[in-house]
Length: 430
Image (cartoon, helix red, strand yellow):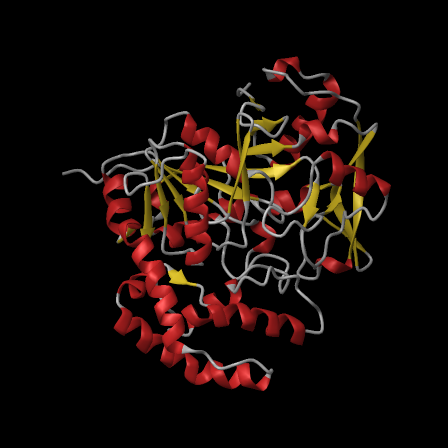
């Protein structure tokens, strides 16, 4: 038997601060029937995707974006932290909207860690105790990853055994109760929580399995697999704008760890970006426009959080942070979304470097908050809506895209010109 099957796993990763439109690209790939399996491998329900299918919009936070295609096996792998009540709610809503979700097209890792109710309380306590607020979604993601690292976490498999579940909850309560009481909250009612979460386990039991086994089988059989990234490079726990980051690694290596696939099997890595920059929450953002231009980008681009509904901060495209994402993610191509949005401006600015501590630099330093953007200006006023081919773009739009390619050294393969899956232009290699 030959094991020399590399290159059948493709990856989709965000390159900015999230919300770049990754779900639309994953859905496009899955709908093309090129893939037999799609994997969500990192993050939790702090990551939201809006999927557009015809006239319908579907907001998902835990379900892989491929769930709209019943022919694709959608997998929530062990690197994801799961709020079972949220996941059940998503499944039920999708089923009510006519989307088929069964064991035949959805599998959930029995190793994935579970977000417990006290972790949401701890999330709030930790945020309030910080001098500099991070802007967390408050969904318990960070504390869940913390308990995972402390080896006290509760996993999906534990929801299927009430006795084991109750024992683990009581163990967690020994330390957590001290913190809760100190901040004026009630102690954990272990029996009540165990009853509630065991019921969640009963509801989800048919989907829960060892996803490592089916992923390994798919890879070795040569099936086409796609890993769907959550959040983005600048929110990476190690490489992002710490401490204003998420609690996991949403880069390509993090996706491989979270799905259990080695780098030998990777084919394409598509980096998703917007034609401008947006951010939710706190933290440095050199190109943020705190004026009417930023407000206009927000309204034209409908920049409000899928998960929280919060208005996003908006600004010009920062190509320095895009270029920084090339090597850590191993990018093979780019997808530039919201070209239809940025084309509404007469003049468009792009950050190509920073003024930093009396110097001019072309990289992202650890203290990004001390950077002032250096801009290059482009002509806008281009309308790309309804275009089917890149050759139909006007010169201004082409100049913008081709500068992104030359600056980053990575070809642009996809261009988003609207919210729907059909609003994507595939740029052929020259």
